[in-house]
Image (cartoon, rainbow, N blue to C red; front, side):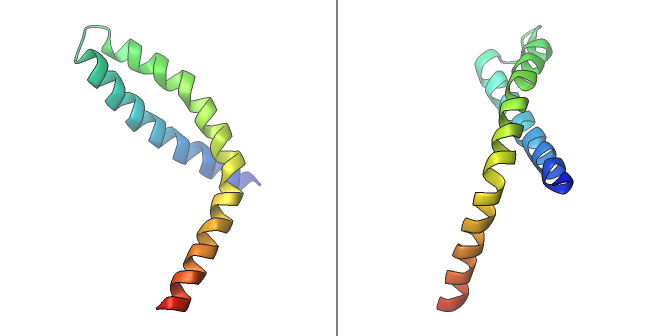
Length: 75
């Protein structure tokens, strides 16, 4: 349970960092308030992504196992 929580936090943090950075840059360019706007987007999005990752991870792991089993059978 702890490992799953840490994984969800780390993965969601990196993904949200990259996505919010890109979208903020595309929307604002390198404006004077870029860092503040990016940080606002990051801290709003990260809890949502972390919670979603924590909830979705078991199902995603099961689906991945099924896909890999199918791929190994056809190989």
